[in-house]
Each structure stands twice: as C-alpha cells, then as structure tokens.
Image (cartoon, rainbow, N blue to C red):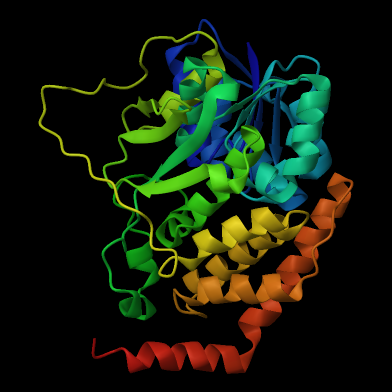
Length: 405
C-alpha cells in the first residue's frame, strides 16, 4: 500500500513511520509532507526514499535542498520536491497513492485531505481541523463518493472499534474519555497563575504544543465531541465526556439494552495508527500489550464545564452549526499562541475564544475556499481581541488578585 503522510515530522507522522518501519513488506511511502522541520524531514527522506517531499514554502524548500546536499544524497536519488498548498494537494491525490494519513496540525491540511477524499483515497484522519472547521462539506463528500475515512484519534478510533460490536440503529450514546489534563484537581481560581511550562506537562500523552495546551483546557476534548458528531452522525446530546485520568479506556459505546462496549489499549498512538492502516484486519500489536497481572485502578468523573469552559463552548458551537466551529478552532489557535507567548493568562484562552465567537457572525460555507476565508477572518478577529488593552489588564489584575491563594 502506497502512503502519503501529511505532517510527517509531527508526533503522529513519526509514529506512523514507525508502524511502516515494522511492516516494511506491506507499506511504502510515496509522499512526505512537512512544514519547517528540515532536519527530521531529511532523515525521513534518507530512510524511506519517498517519490515526493513537500514543505511549507519556498524558503524552507531551499533549506531542504541544502540539507540533502550536505547529507551527500546524489540529486538523481532525490524525491520530487515542492512547497505550498498546491503541491500538498498533488502529493495527496497522486494516482499511485492508496492511503493518506492526514496529520497536519491546523487548517493547512484541510484542502489536501478534502481533495484526497474527492479522489476516493482511503483516509486516516488525525487532523481535527478537517472536521471541526468543515465537517459538513467533508462528510458530504465522504458519503456521496463512498470514501473510506478511518479516525486515528485514540477516542474516535476506539469508538470506531466499539461500533463494530452492534447495529448502528441500536446505539444510544457515545462516551469519550478525557485524562483531565494537568489541572484536573487545580482549584479554578489558581488557573490564573498557570505558566506555559506547567500547561505543557501533560500527565499521559506526548504531543505537540498546541494539542497539549488544548488538552489542558479540555478544548481538545471539545474538538473531539464535534468530530464525533460528524464521524458517527450523532447529535451533541448523544456524545458525552467522562474524565478518566488513567487513559486506558479510550471510548465507550452504549447500546439500547444498556450494554456498554469499551475499547481498551496501551496509551500509544501507534495502536490507532496501525488500526487505521490495516482495517478491517487486525495485525500484530505494534507496542507491548497490557499486562493484566499488574494491579490497576480506573476512576471516572464528570468534567467541570465551568472550570473548563472551552468544552462547553464546543458543545454550543456544534449545536449552533454552520461556521461556528470553524471560528471556535481559529480563535483557539490564536489564543493558545498568545498564552504560550505570555501575552494572556491561561483562563484568557477561553475568554478570547468566547469573545471571538460572540463577534463573528456564523454562516454556512458552501466551499472549502469559503471555510478558509472564515478561518482567516476569525483569526484576525481573535488577534484583535487578544490585543485589546482593557481585556488584558482585567485578566492580569484577576490573576494578581489571586497571588496569595
């Protein structure tokens, strides 16, 4: 099976290549699509020898060419090189490609994934923004064309597996688990003093910076609720979230007789990645199996929607429909950047997103181009919200008033 990997240098990309490495007889890398991480991409090119390699822009492309020269790879052995959105689409839709792993963080991977769906490529979906920003258009294309889309996020992948245990008409509820992040037990008022270093210290998973912060705010879980609604054709009130700090159970599906099926596996992304790549088969485990001789305790609790307001906003945006979830995602990305840069406090992320949603009029985009324009204008609006001196002063004073806590 020939694979194009969108986001090859990120955590999902690196883990995908490890699965390929373990199944060299079964998978071949056709295309590697990355952003700016030239060192990692160069090493991937040298090992997997793709036919095509794409980076973010022409400046990064120049650096990649220099790096390949330094590595001593003869030009006749170079893959076809390119940069930018058009070349990303080409890498994802080439006739030789059988499977596209969509793992670019942000809307940068949306167009290439959508075009691959239109070309009926099998999709392993690890990019939340594809469905959060454009779920209606994407799933409409999936259903009309019969494209196979397998979720890779551990929770949706787990739900996909549980749904194989019964008829779709018998499903009454989908339950997604959340670790609760590093501030699960932190009093709400103390969140004003949270530093980026503390927020990046996730207790269970190793992920990129934005996803890690989104996990700390439970925004990541909000995005997963939105994704689940689109993937499994469920209304928001049939998708629940439960805090499960051990992260051993990834998802549960409740059927109409009260039976609940749970998907349990090691907390290693190679498990859902391999499932998506080999479905409907199940290949040998790519990681050590769970040892049931070890004592273990699993706990569950309801999320605090007031403490983690972004989760509540995600439900509301999905209920509202249209472009609201696209704005939700765009505003969150800008707010997370501002928090990591020290320009707003941790609770300011939710404040920025909520204010942006209140100012941006929701519409119903009819094309991917319209979605991308909504994303652009929402980002601009979120930057304005972050830059407002009055809002920054209020939030920082709130933080200072809690210094003695």
